[in-house]
Length: 125
Ligand code: HEM
Image (tube, rainbow, N blue to C red; front, side, top):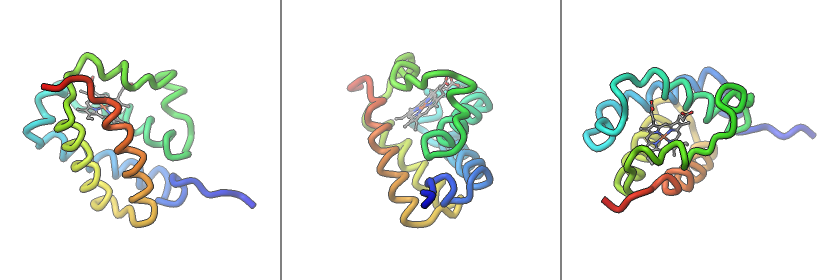
């Protein structure tokens, strides 16, 4: 029996693209998150698309384009608090709904991302 990945279950590339687009539309408007990001979201949007595709069982796009994720290290230049992690997750939750990702995939994805988001926290203030 072949096991289906979350990536397949949500509709693959089309849904993943939509998710990432919807996510950064929200990050872009978020008063706490906006200032941490560079002026343009173009690069991070593409890299996040590679990362999430790979994380949820799709093609290993991040590895091919960026190598080892080392995400915590890549986030160290940016001061990230627990409040930022919560805000990031709030944008992601809304983006999942906008991308019409339904249960049980949504809950499974949010659980995984919650761990990752709090792992990025690197400062108290
Ligand atoms: C890059 C912020 C959590 C995945 C970045 C960048 C910032 C940022 C400022 C750099 C953007 C740039 O240089 O263009 C945050 C904040 C987070 C957070 C405030 C709150 C906790 C996460 C999580 C993930 C993630 C949970 C994964 C699920 C990525 C990826 C990149 C990135 C893949 C691009 C890394 C690269 O290849 O250079 N993030 N991030 N981030 N973030 Fe986050």
